[in-house]
Amino acid sequence: MSPVTPLHVRSFRTLRRNNPFRVLGEHRNFRLFWFGQTLSLIGTWMQTMATGWLALELTNNAFLVAFVGVVGALPILVLSLHAGVVVDRADKLKIVKVMQSLMLCEAATLWAFTVTGHITIGWLLALSALNGLFSSFEIPARQAMIVELVGREDLPGAIALNSSGFNLARIVGPAIGAIVIRTGGISWCFALNALSYLAVLVGLFMMRLPKYLRPESTSTRAEAIAEGIRFMFGTRRVRVLMVLITAFSIFGIPYLALMPVIARDLLHTGAAGYGTLLTAVGIGGLGGALFLAAVGQRVRRGRLLAWGSFAYAALLLVFSQTRSVRAAWPLLLLIGCAMIFNGALSNAILQELVPDEFRGRLMAAYSFVVVGLSQVVGNFTAGVIARAFDADYAVAAGAVVMLGFAWWTFMRHPDLRSL
Image 1 (tube, rainbow, N blue to C red):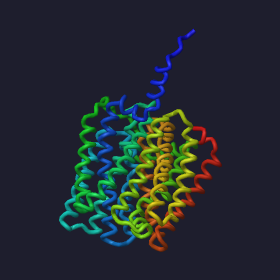
Image 2 (cartoon, rainbow, N blue to C red; image 1 turned 180 degrees about the vertical axis):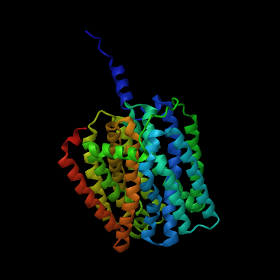
Image 3 (cartoon, rainbow, N blue to C red; image 1 turned 135 degrees about the vertical axis):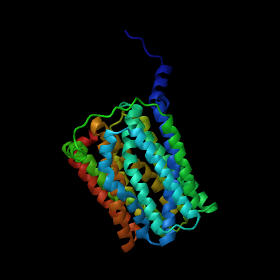
Image 4 (cartoon, helix red, strand yellow; image 1 turned 60 degrees about the vertical axis):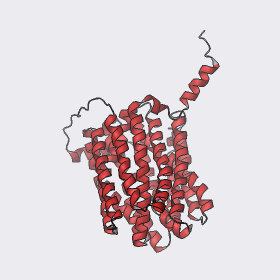
């Protein structure tokens, strides 16, 4: 007869297993990456908030506010599939180091133009496009690198923690950004973002990974892209998930790009109020991400993905009809949580379904959709609708389409809920 495990030992093991930060404690490289990346993302969210408000001040045009996001994502749309091949055939850590350094330079340039009063909508669009160029290589390399930092077993928890850092930054960044805009001016949000890139670069240079061995490949870049596309379309679950991700990225995420217009024209608040709305989304997302990091693989993620997808769409529909900041705040908390359930869970499931040789290309396709299509097609469409009617019509129309895609995905493919 095996001895009975003492109650206090079982309790300790349960607490350890349910600790959402366990992966940080057990993997030094991921710990360095997570802390540096989170500090850098705080700066990025400050810049994102400031860029939207600056575009509104420069143009007073809802379409051009959304168009800044379109231009920033266009290089990602054009280059991501090529970048995926590069990521699969090159040192991912080196790619991330180089791209983060170039993004630091872009943020510093944006600060210099703004603080000297030389910024125009043309320069803002050009620098946004440059940032998109660097991101088209950095995003898939960073996403594909996570498995090298923690291994396959802890990958779902690491992805969820990565999302928690993103949402922690979404809380802190806009809050600090609102204070900086009020006390020092928009330009200093860009300066602080440039400094924040140093945090992630320090962590990246402190990492110790096994020596990179370049994989042998005889296929051309075009052939490698075709191989990746055949894998995605030929693997049913990957194909269905990518369709869902595409629909939710194009019709769901653009509400964030329209938030400056919603804050000013529909909720009648200023830059500080705009920052608190983004903070609400971040708090909800942080809560959702920490929950996912704690439960790890002990829940059916497909079922949570279904619930999160339906909730995300329904809550956006309600939010589109809201005209009070007090009512908008709790709604955005829930929207942030549901959005993370949809995004982090679909990312984790995809990464478990993909073999390592296609990981870079799949993550490139993921960034092509989540960043590229959402901002080029999604923001452009939302901007056109907001210009012709109003921002609430754009958000509501997107939410209705999302509900339709969620129903099609989980009713027609019920096996996804068992993942």
